[in-house]
Image (cartoon, rainbow over all chains, first blue to last red; front, side, top):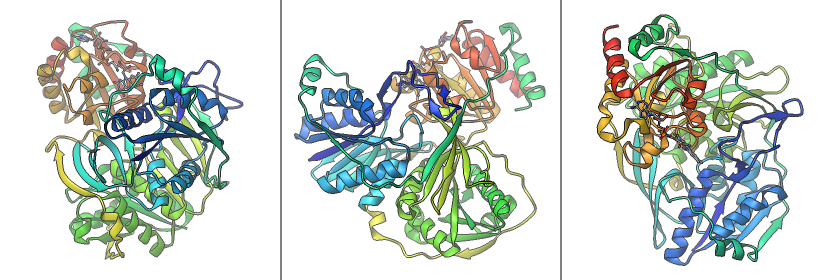
Length: 245
Length: 320
Ligand SMILES: Cc1cc2nc3c(=O)[nH]c(=O)nc-3n(C[C@H](O)[C@H](O)[C@H](O)COP(=O)(O)OP(=O)(O)OC[C@H]3O[C@@H](n4cnc5c(N)ncnc54)[C@H](O)[C@@H]3O)c2cc1C
């Protein structure tokens, strides 16, 4: 089985977001970039499937050279090789086109990615890729087992979950509790250095959506503290002052 | 340019978030001098369908094929694409939801559409087509220029307040050609918590964290939620520990919600938790630690023990 895991390189979850250049660029100063947390779940499950079935894992990132540390970490966690499409990932459609082009050339049985990236939170790339390949997509996937050419899946739905079955090939958007995040060990880090990381140039130039500028939310007003022994007053304030109940 | 709105049903009723989407779509239609058509898939009666008119739709297309009675993102995308083609729509609006996520992507792929998710305001069409969306899990906003001919807007819930008018939409049957490949995934079983208020749709949310000490203590959270007609939610460690189902987990790696009122009980307010709830209109924090970071992002705060405070709040709500 050949598994493709697509990963994003995103600001660490604790990052305070700020912009520069007249609010047109993310201020990267002091920001640590990490693998998208949802992508980490996808990779962790791929590594488990590799241990169980002897699958091979290719990790793919659409990004410029500064994403390579994130890709190397994925190799250290257990991917066999990596592809970086050398382009700035500005638009979901464009990113999906790159992934679909690689997938067409290599015919993977399973394409896994996170349910969404934590920068633009679009949650769209997996579905667009699947549509481009003409195969099913399922998201958000909480459990995944492979039995021959059949995938058994549990996906989250609003207020519950759903058990599904589908034949490979598939594109899946993953989330917890599909697997526990994995941390690279020393051996993984050493061997990652020698694993192939192929850089390819992008195909297509579609940029259907671009971001003109960014803005930060207005700060909340000061908190109004209510003494615990008068907790009931809160309900009055929510009723008469905030007028939400 | 005509505007097509996909409205989602929950047990035969148009969801509140879809009412918001219909209203949003009708406003875009007004701005662009066209009409708003709503496409609804699955079983619903004519009165319910015509009620789309209250929110500004003039026409409802209703697809009822038995194969479509269960939500199926791939098949629904095929239906909406066919409706967009019939209506000549190049703006498609829908409420962001788990079904919508599955659909919008397939639709974007089919129609080669420009797409904005988590849209929080009406578009600016004075020069091109620009929409504001929430990004970085609510930590920032982006102004997106949609350049493709077809534009898909997935509206963040609870950010648009619909005005209702006394009008009915006309209802037409819609029978698109279905695509067998869209039914390749078979649903084996579905588990749904019934009777509860759906968290992503809720106006009020009572949420609790590790401060509740264990699942056996959730009664006091549920009592307050019940009194307020609120949904319940939790922090990540709580769902990781299986104290509560994963579908209640809010935050960076869970659901992103924007209710009118969010009451956080025994939750520290880590940045990853905040990220999923910071667009709530009013935030109340109850924590016994006066230095809990959550107080910095709250509108109202009580430094106190949840086991003492929650039952008293429940009584006060019941007395309203
Ligand atoms: C990549 C990543 C993603 C993450 N995603 C999420 C996410 O999506 N959602 C999320 O919630 N977290 C997320 N986290 C975890 C997050 O960092 C915090 O660990 C988590 O939010 C803490 O949950 P908590 O506040 O319930 O627990 P704790 O941090 O243990 O806090 C419990 C709080 O309860 C208070 N308390 C205790 N007893 C009482 C009492 N009797 N009365 C009143 N108050 C009391 C304490 O003072 C404390 O403030 C993520 C972390 C990472 C690294």
